Image 1 (cartoon, one colour):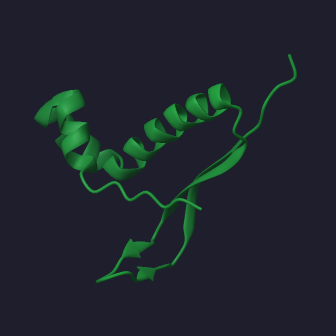
Image 2: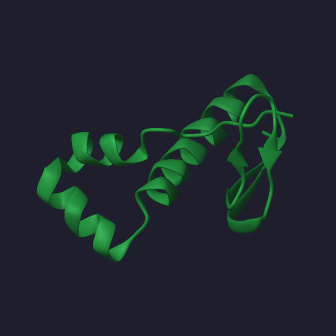
Length: 87
């Protein structure tokens, strides 16, 4: 199992759409979920190219704690099953 924590979502959004856009996005949407959605799309494409089937979840709540601890109140924002199509 892999756990990936995006630690600079705001900076990524700011870089992609500019500072004003990032402020507006922050009022309407969550920068973290936007970056996670883009990552899920890229991971899905890469997994399919490598023949990997997976379940990718974007969840709100878990945080890395001090040391090696993980705090896990879960709220699933997005879910995608990656499967291989028979060609």
